[in-house]
Image 1 (cartoon, rainbow, N blue to C red):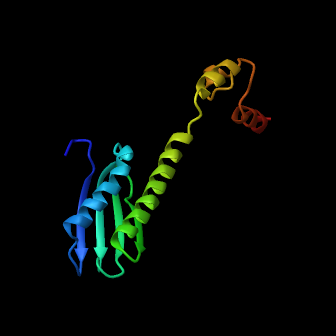
Image 2 (image 1 turned 120 degrees about the horizontal axis):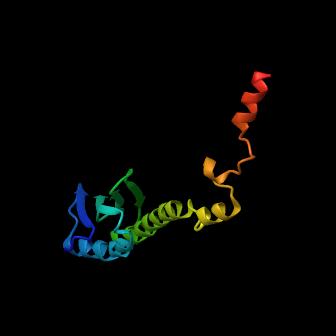
Image 3 (image 1 turned 90 degrees about the vertical axis):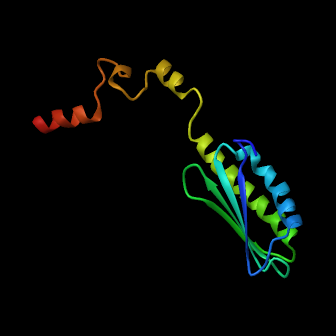
Length: 139
């Protein structure tokens, strides 16, 4: 396992997760490798693996709360496939939120327009709202 790889832990409740099931889950969870800059470890918790399994994926991140996807299905492999899709959607949504909150080139546009936030971006003859209020309070 490389340093960038995400650790995968398997936990079976009331049943044993077979080697074949672990291989299938690891293969499907490999799709989440593109998010490895944030992910540290993924837990696969399965309850009653062989008969109507309830599977839970818990994705632990470098910072922030872990992401959880949980479902019950007819087979372990089908449930894993569904949960990987759910977890991938959560990770993608979180990544988009982090990425989209900044507008590229906004500082350059503000500097050209002279509408920055600091005093150096205001013209000499412009007054802030606070300055106008102070002057009106004095009179």
